[in-house]
Length: 170
Image 1 (cartoon, one colour):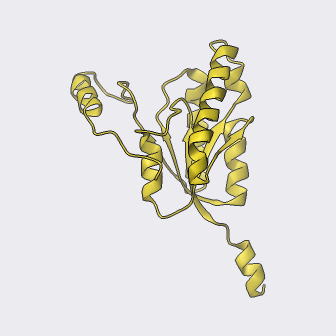
Image 2: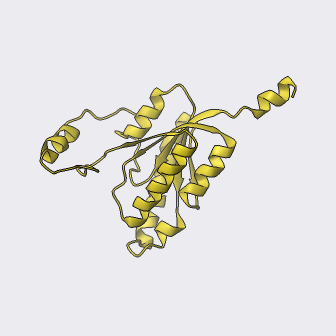
């Protein structure tokens, strides 16, 4: 393999911010920490057919999501960046992105949704392990996953709610 082929074979390292239900640019921990890394950041949103067809879903919700994403796109224009939107299951999207890039980390908020999104996150967690991708989820509400007891929940909630907002989009 000559030098040009070797250069073409090397995939670019990137950080992915997976936007789920936290559709804002201000005080968005995943975005904040992605910007702290010295790598290109790819913002991703997946309109997942399985989630959209789930019984607790409604067209009004998806219209609101789309409008929110369009608003975010407009706010991102001055920074010459945009959200990559897919109408596919998240796992398929991440497989495609992993074949084109070397994903070093996946950052998202910790989604508290329904069984289908919980099961999806377990699959994504396995994908990340298989591909040596660090997936960091950030809490963004009062729900604390995997507590062995609720004994200190109130203290954890108060600590989270009193944190300084993260400054984003620089």
